[in-house]
Amino acid sequence: MKDDAFEALTVETLPARLSAIPEIATRVGGAPSGWKVREVGDGNLNLVFIVEGAKETVIVKQALPYVRLVGDSWPLPLKRSFFEYHALTRQQARAPGTVPALHYFDETQALIVMEFLSPHIILRRALIEGRQLPKIGRDLGLFMARTLFRGSDLSMKASERKADLALFADNVELCDITENLVFSDPYFEAPMNRHTPGLDGLVKELRADRDLKVAAQRMKHAFATRAETLVHGDLHSGSVMVTDDETKVIDPEFAFYGPMAFDVGMLLANYWMAYFAQRGHEGDESRNAMRAYLLGVVDETWHVFRDEFARLWRTERNGILYQAALYEDQDDGLAAEQALNHVIHDLWTDMLGFAGIEMHRRILGLAHNADFEEIADETLHATCEAAALKFGRHVTVNRNTIQSLAELDALAQALDQRKLS
Image (tube, rainbow, N blue to C red; front, side):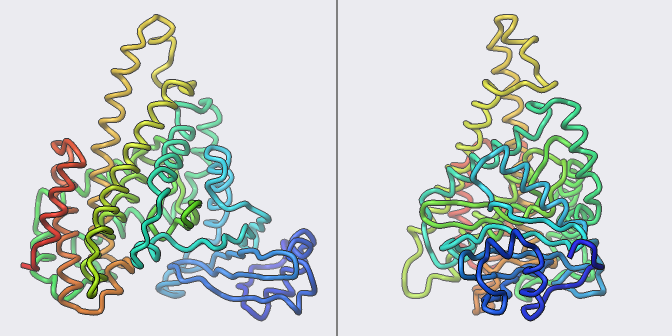
């Protein structure tokens, strides 16, 4: 397939085309005519297939030359699969065992064949169903600390990091999606925006909020200009697959060099949105235990991230930033700890700003979360989203004065009890 012009796969054409790749045909096993092929892609951008053969089941992911959610009126380059593949290789090296194993990559066909994760399900689906996964806080906190620290000038050789920066700098179109759909479109009446009708008054208020719009653009400024580390770029609860025992991160096609706290803010925002959506999934059974669990996951994820980041600072700080020659080598470990405290504080502040923006864009922009979208009662749907919007506004605008997660827990609990107003 490598020498052929790009051709989108279908359930019907995939067996013959995949069987032409010897290593994959051998891995799947059996005659291609007997393979069971299902298309399971429900995301915004790509085709995704499950291919089950006599020996093994694999995932086949193929980029399309347009945004699948919108159609061919929004063209998008195939090279995003190149960035996804290279991001996965780096994440595997920096946080082993946290991403699916890669079996094959074809740049021309924008095709990645990878490990089929089973019995894993998407984290967002698990949270909607009220499942309390015991390991996600620890696993994702470690994943973020290790990938973000080890992809930065805190750890990497300067020449290697600059080469990586140059490679991922070409992921222009997907960065453009984030820069517009996440940081700008929610704050004015952009053509592709949509929101629940019951939110009209609140949406008008937020779009007239000078402090909020300035804060949102300051976060966009950081996103566009601070190439601190290789970030996943789209780390939400739909980009994680889970069982009770294992957590895997998927879909890093938005990867680029950006602010270190961006991934952390996006992920915690999705936990908070799951929290505010609980009322809409409650029915006759209380979800209070699930609410407490989700706030606990926020706490655990942040603290594991912070503690692992600090451990790596003390043991793997071999890059050009905060060199040991200035601190430990001069018997001044306290100065290194002082510098670490400043870095952690900046990560905390940035995380809050990015989290608030993520909550707004998922309710006011183009791409919405199933957490809210699956709430059938429109009034209840709007009530849940209103609480999330107000929370998002608070953490974005007041990010420099918020001192603790306990403070945010109290705010979340208070907002969750209010009716839409």
